[in-house]
Image (cartoon, rainbow, N blue to C red; front, side, top):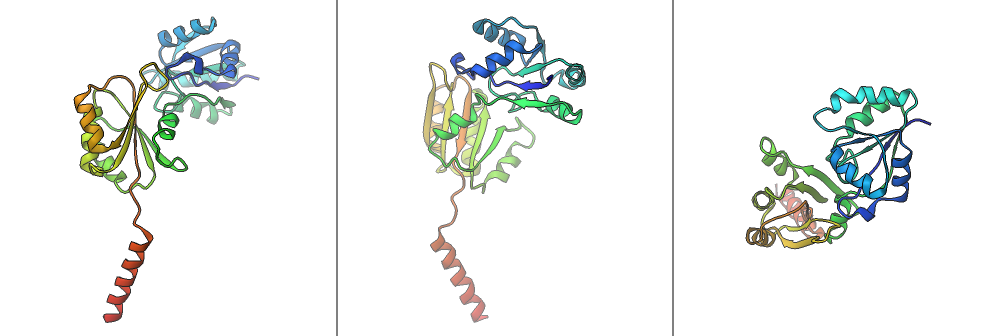
Length: 244
């Protein structure tokens, strides 16, 4: 049956492609790619010959309806991004919504994404977390950080290597230099690295070592007041109330 398949692709190590993803890419009528050159390299590695069409943030508004129409006419389409799962800080949401609204089946394959490995190896709680992706580059950036200041869950950010130092400086200003942070770069690749410590310590490291590669930053959640502190506040409030 015709449908839209969302197919995650490796974030670095090409061996991370799943057997099912390979099967879907082989059987699709055509593949939508964020960058056809990047996806062509992956397909060549997998020995797959398939027609590729560009689908990225600059043309997705114009092409989503025509793609949905093609699927509605019986075509099976696979959507991939340059790396990871489409829709997660990559094009994909608009096409998925268009297909859902048109009653077209959408099936998302499980697979690679950078945020989960970075979170798990950070050493911070993983049961609940807040994924922020890329912060606004300019307008609204500090406002968003202020809104996250008291967030108790682990917070995950994507960041460009050119803004890592500035980003950590802003984190220190907003969250405090003593808040714990874990910075992972080049996940699954040859030079994969994770630096952990306080924001101040990690900022010092990347000030001395030029940031290179793709970055995922995990900030520890805001510490909650201890129960004893809550009891003390309650006792103080009650005593004050009684005096009044």
